[in-house]
Image 1 (cartoon, rainbow, N blue to C red):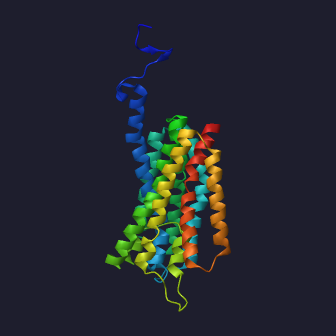
Image 2: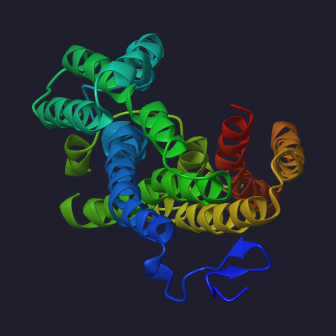
Image 3: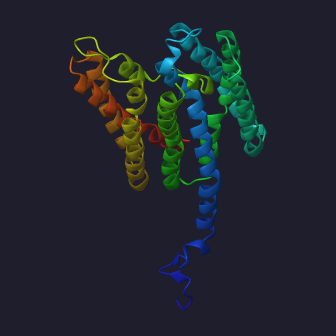
Length: 302
């Protein structure tokens, strides 16, 4: 056919990638939407994970907080989160996400700002209740937004990048906490708040040799998980790329699930070898790559 815009019955692709309207749209989305949600995810994760970091960096020994109150911090966060997560999604169908998501994020920031003024566990309980309420819109709201803007082949990698924000937040938090503890000496717990569920940190905090001496300093307890977070980021990129290119959802997910079963089974037995425990703790970091794949699979079905 004389018209060189047609070849073999198909429209020819533009020579320049940015002459393609779809490519330009995707580029804008990656530069604006994806960057925004990634940064928002990092900041949110740093806020939420900081209680565990503070706990192993001096809060455990420093009144007025104790281990039971640390658990209740997370409980008072989780209750409104569970209650409001569906409500937040319903609101997002009525209010533009460009208005609703930033508004909730601003409210979250205000609540977090007042946390540093708290001088009692009760005050933090109240603040964490509102933090959980405003946080309920974050993950499901952002994922729903990504569902509506990216194609099936583009979605899984973007979900992986967004979900890497929680790992990146933990990386920055751990390194920052280690340096703050070394330079500011266990004041840093006032700068951070929320969620005590990083069991690896608690293990590193208490593991000791046969003589009862702690194996790791506070600095090392905060810094060692950096290797696991790096492993998670690498695994998410590799497995999400495979899933996206091959359109393998359940295949990759089931493989990672089996790795997780084996890893947690070994840890459940709790071998006497410290090296073995460390190895399988780090191996569980790889299995976190399954989450964006599962969510993309759900998006395929929907």
